Image 1 (cartoon, rainbow, N blue to C red):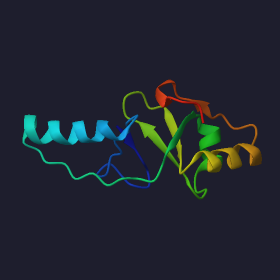
Image 2: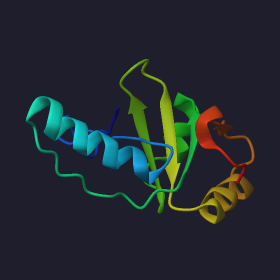
Image 3: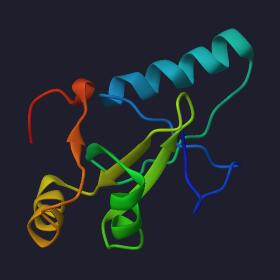
Image 4: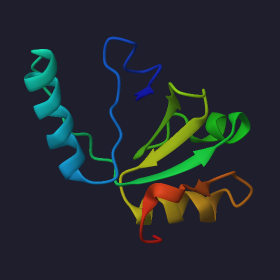
Length: 107
């Protein structure tokens, strides 16, 4: 679970490695807890771990959002696609944008 200052606590962001994981969560919430879930897909496809200083630079940029991981408070920058990530990296080469281990195939 991720949270966003833009979305507030009433709209947490569920992160997953692939689309099937969203189906599993939706089914389990309905079947095991009797709590139907309505998920809205966000258009982000690429994620990187970042730090506070880099988050300040990324915040407000088109095609980027910085979220906070509920589990440990780490900052996760999400991008609409790998090309947007690469453009940001070119514009700001000093940013901390560490690939996530569960991200699968490198971008």
